[in-house]
Length: 88
View 1 (cartoon, rainbow, N blue to C red):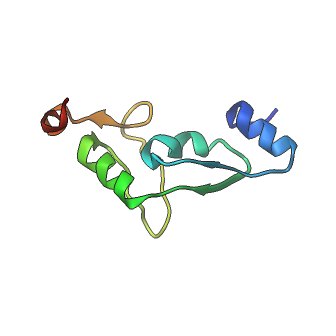
View 2: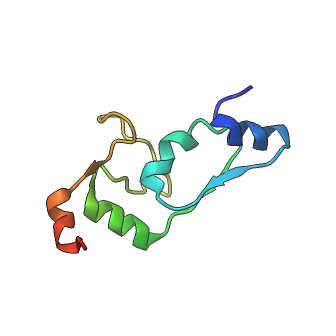
View 3: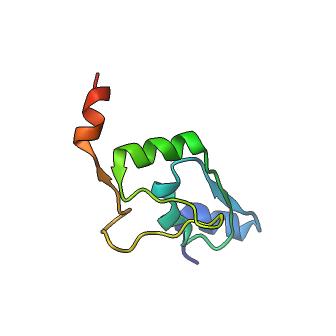
């Protein structure tokens, strides 16, 4: 079995590509392990919210996203003070 978890392995076994839906800052690292990766959805409104509420949110550089390596896990830290006005 190759990397990318069971969904990546299943897609590869059937000669299919796999893509990720939204939340690019969260999905970019696991997507690096998928051998047959298709497009990673990148909605500007979602990215704007990620950057507003999470320290370490990624930005596209020449159309590509690269996982951050300066923080553990997905590299995101919730900005509680910035999110406080939106609490319900």
